[in-house]
Each structure stands twice: as C-alpha cells, then as structure tokens.
Length: 122
Image 1: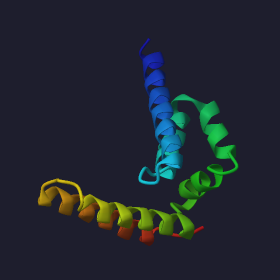
Image 2: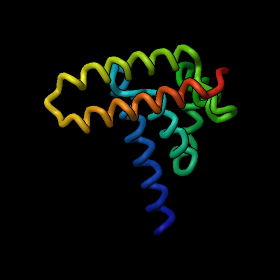
Image 3: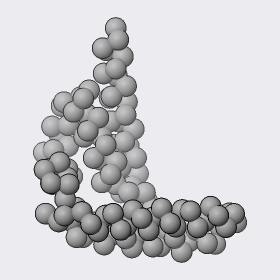
Image 4: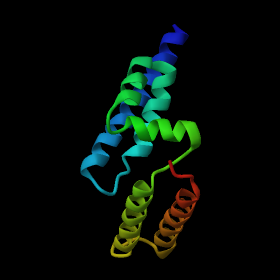
C-alpha cells in the first residue's frame, strides 16, 4: 500500500512537471527544460516508461542527457533564458508590487542567470 502510494506521488510530480513544461512551450515566461528535467527525474523513481520516453524524445532527450551526464546547458538555452529573465525583470517594474518584492525577484533572476552561465556547455 505505502509503496504504491509513493509511486503514485512520483508519477503525479512527473505529470505536473511535464504539464508545466508543455505550458512553457507556449508561454515564454515559463521555462520548459527545467520542468522536463524534473519530470524525467520523478519518472525515474515512479514511471520508468515516461523517463525512457523523455530520454528518447528528439527535442528534450538531448538536453536531459547532457544535464545528467555533465550538468551541461547549451549556449542557446543560456541566451534564451537570460533574455527571457531580462524581459521579465523589465516587465515586473510595471506591476503595482512593493519595491522590495520587485527588487527581490530581479535579484533572484540575476543570480539564476549568473549560475546558468557558469554551467558547462555540451
């Protein structure tokens, strides 16, 4: 009973992550690949067939394998993420949010961009 519940939780995480990744295909402010990476990770624990399908996928398979093998991120993905985060940082200043929240979100995105550019490339 407990094992099947844990398997179902892993599968639920995989499906939710994959759904968020699919949403990211259509909404530029939602990242796709990180969610697909989480889906593959969760799938490896509770849904091996989904993990295998993701690893063999023509578009998402190579980034997943590169991340797993060397923690590598392609230069194209780095540029795309940096441009998207920069655009989001500009847009957030037009929302009626407290200054501390705007500055915090922009700071987090800046730190993520710095970390991302420090990752090796395939």
